Image 1: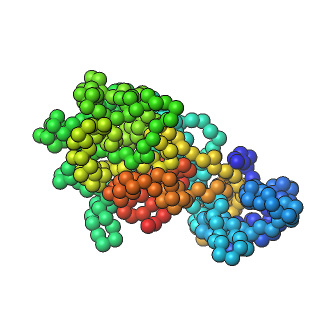
Image 2: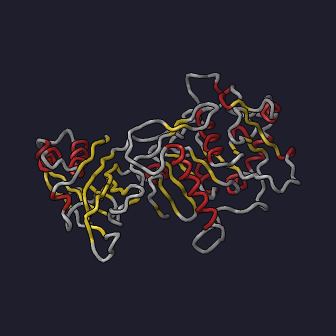
Image 3: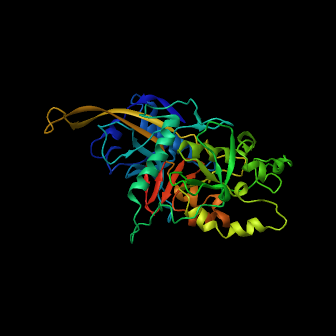
Length: 418
């Protein structure tokens, strides 16, 4: 649901004291009253979004005509909430009020965010490329925006969260003394479709300049039921039969044979400028009759995840072949053009009318539902990996989240706290 044309506000929504820009904003009326302002001469963008939501949410079993159904909406911070008459039912955020990047005349209590999230699609053997989609004007888009956000989160954490305190853990321990995993996957910088295992016994320990920062993947296992031969593909796991090939830089692992979730992990690792990746089924020998390697490596999981530069969690993926990098919900968005009184640049002591652009977007900031209550979070191994990781990029079904010792950030640029 994307409203591409520019919209204005009705007299009710633009009112200085009780309109949508006021924290006192409340709308308690019938769907018919909303419809009149949304489709009448004013064509109010806020009323139009509220109307669409009311139409979607009205129960089919309602005995009243749709236009006679009463609804109540109110403002809470940068969100528009729906209020319910049912005892015990809490107000629910339904829309975000967003001031796009670079906009200066909007109220300071609105969320600064991207109205629409960048959409990226990965292809075997290639870097991520941005797909075309309708979008309001933004300062950065596509691949640039996606990796800019990730790198900003990492850089900010690198700079500010390096000293252990009572309220803030050390999110990025320096090496040494952190021990490197027995095996890592060398993904390089994207110049080749061949990647290979980097093994402890082959590392040049005399080279202090070698950057051995690595990304760890936390993912849900699972393969297509209609493809019984999938588990035999070398890109899925390392066995005693193919480990020599996986270690050889000349043969290595063919990127194009890897399941989608693994390919996405490689793309993100390269996009962040990191050259090493750890994936359990490729860095631990699988189906070994003696289980010797698994028994040894299982004891080192605390070191693997707590020592990772960052963990990637494929939270929105349903399995190894599902992928996670191009998951996005269709976010409803409406652009509102109006005017507001704001300080004059020529004389700060006076005000003048300035154009004001605001976006009304579906509220998608729900870390509890997208991460804490995701199906993947019910897995015991996943719980352990999240607990051990110092910082994690969660790729949910609706958006990406950053989690470290300081709290949680959303891809929409909303900040949450633990």
